[in-house]
View 1 (cartoon, one colour):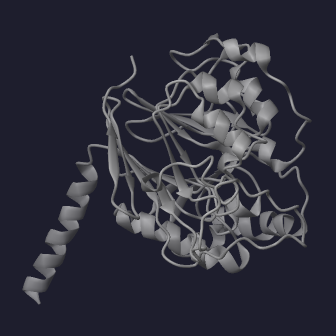
View 2 (spheres, one colour):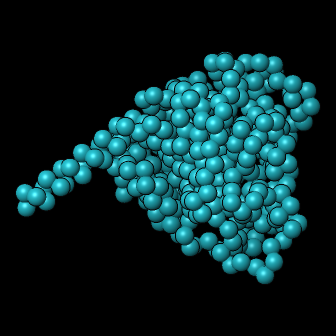
View 3 (cartoon, one colour):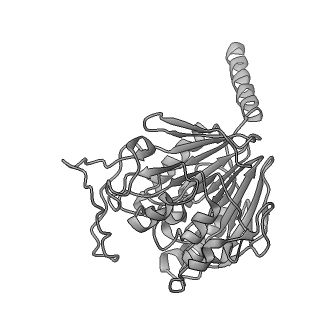
Length: 368
């Protein structure tokens, strides 16, 4: 018994020591079938999760997938959870997840602007009960989110963006002159909480599902975000977001797109990403039928394929089905789900790893 206790104490000490001696900011982009769940783990061991995936019948599935990333990171709690906006693919598994691991702080943009019976019931009854014993914070642009060793700034929330440039940003944006606005977006997408992370010389941005016109507001006439090393591609790679005026201005070295088998990755958005100045690689959580082979990346850079492999993969992009209850369901993906992991260092270098095949690539030279 004494020997067993000694082993347990030693193991616990090793876990604590490991958490204290992390050298990297670890980022897990988790497959939640086109949601955008992203887990950040600082060298200090502090954690921040953005979004929790789908609800309903998929809540346990997405909860399992997020918990697998949490276990891989060696975490026993989530210090902060940001819900970017109130669409089911972004908050749906929150209750499932909160029942399995402590969450220290719940962060969001405030009231829902897109009434929906299921969403409203969740926000009125379930959500308050989840954060009742924790902390609840409504953030506004310019707010900082505490995480030791990192500078995390809220750059968008509740339809508003930052009005002052981030450190080192603020230069005139030449892409503003050719921008063409789209119809105003009254949905929750435009309310998304957007966050910018700085870890030494490494910078990354996650804008949830922020849409076209709101992206323009962030970077015109001056680019208040500056350039980034890593872009967590907005809105699953859909063309109602990812305006060239933003993507080309922030000029990411690497993009990671959390798309689904038939969600995101449409040709218009892919063209914007592929033509972004300085882009070295784009990584995808799923092969997208909507981009086919014409607008996709090599298989090494794709974490999840199509479970029911057709005899021949389409070269041309498949048209997205019309929305609504009569839409053809997407191909099922209920087998193993793989994440894409980023390990970033303070010198600005970072390594991206595809959990499906173990393929890694290191991006060494930091931007000046």
